[in-house]
Figure (cartoon, rainbow over the protein chains, first blue to last red):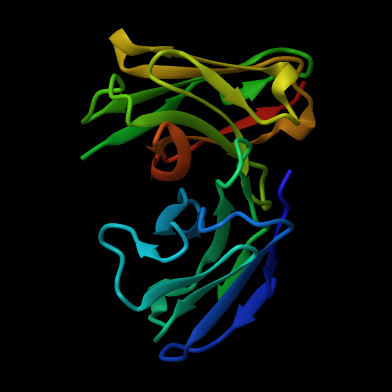
Length: 106
Length: 123
């Protein structure tokens, strides 16, 4: 099983700042990685797929990068609605897995 | 707009079988371009993929719970189901159904999710 490790566990920033979230895989997943945003009481929402492609309707302040084992989700200028938990998800093997999440808080 | 909706009992006794159904509206499950998945999230914890089925009924399960899981599809009703046997308190979670995009027949990301349903395992 591929283990995804997200860092930091919690990120404290202010609106207008830049957020950088990391996801590291225990072995290469090529570009088979997605990012989701989850707010309290809601289902996760797809943000990024194939490491760097934005899902439909996602603002361009969200960007993803990386390949192999190291990936980054960047939010260029934080808006109040961006404060949530973010999960990475690898689908490079037949048994997919999620990271443990990064909480982005004000 | 595709919508998914989970339904089933919110309380299951230990050692019994958890059964949930996901109804799909706004699109057909018959397309081979997608798989149909179950994912769960224990309270306050992260996400765990359970498994998925394709339009023909072929299934793929997380090895960690494979021995207790059955996912089936009812295309005529545009729905798919989850059964998890011999449940314990550790199976208490919000259960989500989701559509899985596929590339060349391989499962990739989850692009549409249901709102989730909390299932508590308790006597």
